Length: 240
Ligand code: ADP
Ligand code: MG
Image 1 (tube, protein in one colour):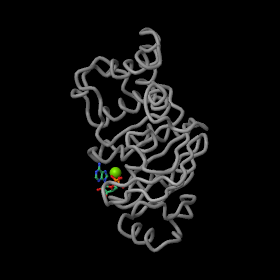
Image 2 (tube, helix red, strand yellow; image 1 turned 30 degrees about the horizontal axis):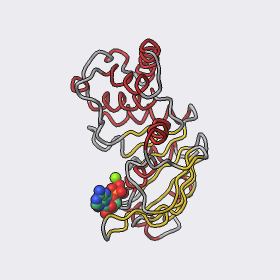
Image 3 (tube, rainbow, N blue to C red; image 1 turned 90 degrees about the vertical axis):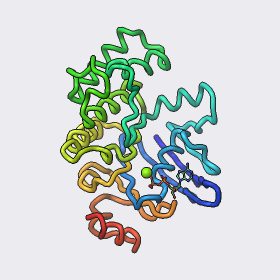
Image 4 (spheres, rainbow, N blue to C red; image 1 turned 135 degrees about the vertical axis):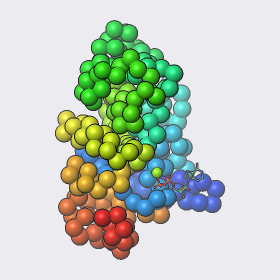
């Protein structure tokens, strides 16, 4: 579903991604972990061209990422993204947040978009919040709304960049539960997170990044119980 080859990204003199390869199969859940500044967010952003790579290629479902225009808008709609800061449209209701993309980009009718939106809000457990503005919701509810909004576009894959890092601790579980449900339902997912419990339980594969490189990648049990590299061992010693 996602095929990354030799991805490179520099910011001035700083190399944020050096030659990154990544494959994510259909229905696979890949958790990306690594120290702050290792290039995890840059990788996510290059996957849907919020950031323009300096080299290498990204293919989604067999197609090279278009550089711009309508083709890029279409492809972005195929890859849902959920950020640390919920990024909801603050002046629109939760329901409107979910119907805007499908009606504008997917050409859905209003009735159809609202029906799907209500189903998704129920699925993430905030059906009663449909008429509220984002600011009237808790952080956990807002992030669940952001996930539902991404799902409303019927994406082929979902990217999560530290989706629980901005939440109060008591709200982390409800968001991880929604993500776990999505994974169980077969969604293709790339998840950047520091939630090692989630990585161990839900990931099909863990990718460890440091200094803009994929240092190692493997099954969660192998990675957590016997990391191959010194850098991964050092990292795990600090976070576990
Ligand atoms: P992570 O998400 O793993 O913490 P990032 O991908 O955000 O890491 O950043 C990787 C490196 O690239 C860091 O050193 C960061 O400072 C740098 N970086 C990221 N975005 C920019 C930017 N827009 N301009 C300059 N440097 C950036
Ligand atoms: Mg980051």
